[in-house]
Image: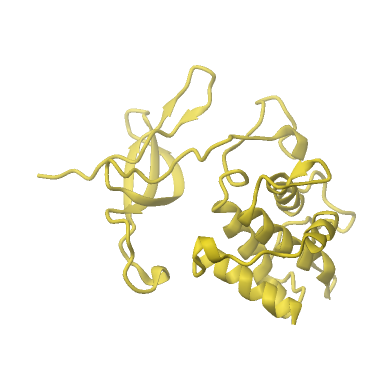
Length: 230
């Protein structure tokens, strides 16, 4: 029963189906136990699936709790920090395991049934929690495979522009113009509210704008440009 309730809560949080004032809360003891449990590993190695069910359950609890109250503190660290560390665990493998595998989720990494959605749900909730999902950066000479090399920006680096009426920018990529100018490529829509199923909205059209750089060498994404109008 608890597993089913948590799945529904996580899905509702991720899709925005619950109004903010009415969000249910998770028992504090459950949240504390979850953040103290190591992150799961999704792998299919030598025809054996790794089924880390308690760890998977703990990740989902941590993601839901961090989304609801990211600044709440457990064991001296915020829930946002606990979730970021769990995500970093399975997204970054400093060195491959003896069998050559890593910790990143993969299509064959069958923990079984409902747990297949946990990684996606946790990442989606993290993306909607600015204290968790923000730019990662590292010194250019650091070991980029070492989790401790990375730091987070306190705020998102590229977001909706109400002033320019550009909403939901995402799926960013980069390229260069023939003259060598760095370009930011992304898609966004020109209206805020989405009628019907947001997953079926077809209007996040491709956009391109220059990518600038700060004196310290970090990218300056700026804000989404307004649509060109005749």
